Length: 261
Image (cartoon, rainbow, N blue to C red):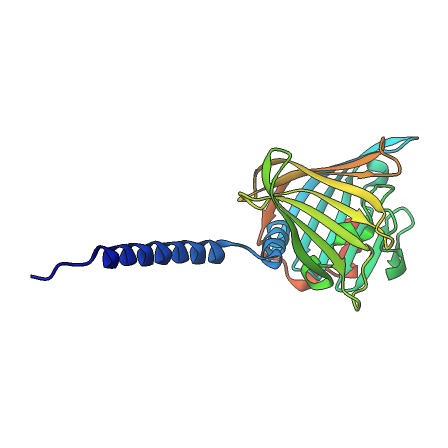
């Protein structure tokens, strides 16, 4: 009858411990998300293959306030149609994006105006959103270098912080973007936008998280400019449906006028 040495038992226990530790580490590594995977998930949360939504936009500046009810149709990254439904005096004002082209339709003068790319930073309907915001011309994953710059607890929540810098060949409007994301469900908490000198320009805050259109997502977005902190533009979704049947032909100049009419 052979007697196992206590040193052999100790060695086996040590080997078993390191094997379990390696397995746990490997599992955690495989579960960890890259910055690209996180941004992809956020991007798909908003878009889907297509969407039809209705929302209110409230705009407050130092001199006036206004509210708009807006309907939007989107398909992928290339197609967007936005139409104002209220108030009556602005009803029918519409914006169409097809790939890299952008048009506005003004029903009072029955005129379609093409928006040059140089005006993508221009305000849409006097709001603190730009044309680029509303039509989602650029995608973060494709146009920016990105990496996780913080992972841990902040403001009482476990979060990821992702910092993005534009690629040299990308035609984008921001010099840097910082996004704070709730870790447990990858819900964005806010985005900060910086100019080419990395001076902070504005903050976009996401709130009122609820299930809508079969997804859990923030249903309110508030943009506050840093140089005018008393001003803001707030968008609140009333309803949204994803992955609806929308042919490419729906996003046409003809339909821009019909929807606007």
